[in-house]
Length: 291
Ligand SMILES: [Zn+2]
Image (cartoon, rainbow, N blue to C red; front, side, top):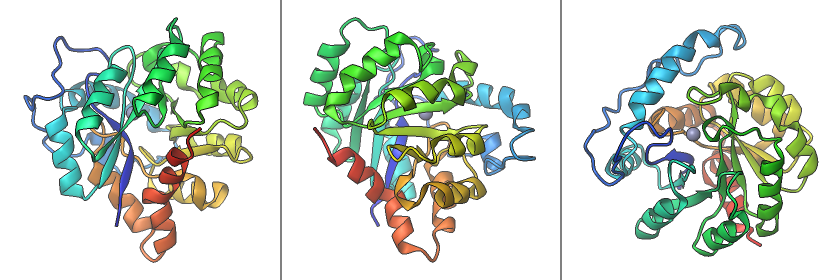
């Protein structure tokens, strides 16, 4: 079956290293699951104890970034049976032009561009990136160090709206940068201001999945990816949001494509229609709508 991983990173998204080379397999991915991953992202005591993992996740994020090169990604896809990956630019550290160029030369990769909300050339850039093949926009308040309800972000979303592309937004605590900028309350304003914009809320709010699901339940324009969530939470998300709003994502290389995929495969064992929707149909519908 066709499998699309909607949340994949290439390059040094945190700006940690000098001269990071996306094409060079200098560091070969060990394919060993990270510490939190080994616990299958379990929400211990309803997520209340997960903050204990914060230092672990932060140090793992630093070391996993080194593996975010193209040869490692293509190997991971081949090994886990992922047919296509959506690769996310993340300005200012991973440039949209670089990701667009890589995806142009690799038919199994689909590009999402990124623009920093403080960028003065927003209008010109979004037009150029969509024309060059970007299928969505990636924003990350923690790494970009800017709140989702800031005026500059609202201005950027205004510019993006006419293109009718999805905005994949990091939602929830983040390990490196301004961690608290990702907390879910910061997103209420954009939900109110852009009721027709297609948002993909990544990680289901990370440590706050239950309040996040409550917050977006009545927002049919908001989708969730499954990265960093255990089977129990994904099940709740399907019950609350329906089958059409859940999308498979791994956040590779920060967690393995195989780990996240196994969770979905197990969850959809006797439900072929649900499996198809989560693994490819939902995201295909969202990115194909166009202008
Ligand atoms: Zn990510």
